[in-house]
Image (tube, rainbow, N blue to C red):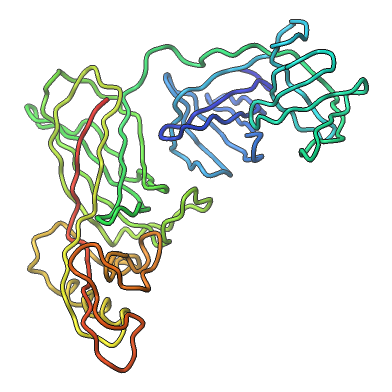
Length: 360
């Protein structure tokens, strides 16, 4: 890999392909690149079977692991129909495309699918497209691309967390995998980010088919409400914890260990004048009651946001419930917006995690 090469990247759990130009290759086995569809800057570390995000101004945060990566390099070939070509425009940006025809010169850019016709002065013509009327300073032939890695793949750990109502959650995992006979910890990551409800990591572990293992997992929710493709990193409430374990068996032929995690709820009824008062009352009851046996600790700013009325969280899910329509534990009665009249509310609160294991 060298400066001005291109890569196409698929991130795990994402079906889209993204294209980036390599801007700098560093001595520490990392390289800097610019994703052409947004201009986001990334630094990747090259591992044996994947790239790992080290720095990012885009939506994929440090620690994120790639799936397929294809490398495109400059060649000495003649520009022809079907040739990949790197086009540098007069604003200094370079994009990778494929030549659709030579007369006239038509190029389809791989990151967007946009097609331009170039005249004899290399001025792009594309009605209403971003580079309509812009001049190409250079057109260089590029290879068809080859995989950056061998056919061997790493073993991946995939975690996906939602609440009992199906809302994705945002936060951070503390994960350990332990084997027995002998009793030994074989994997640990105390800061595995789940910005979009999904977290992933590469596992450098081996074992025998059928070997019993145990996943120890603790989830710390984010202070900010869930937001798909969040561009800001979450503030994590590490004083609030939901924890559990999941026994499973190792499969030497697996490519991924998948754990679907559900935050389970209990519910109780309370009389209050507003929904917010009802939630606060139950929150105070639960946090001062030390007799419950669930592996739950409420202590930080995000804790109360995991409580909700009628099937919605007050802040930790995707939306705030203003209608009182519930999915478990019954519905609210009366006016959810509150007033001077006391109303009976059904308040849902977290009681623990449930984990389902699968492999592929």
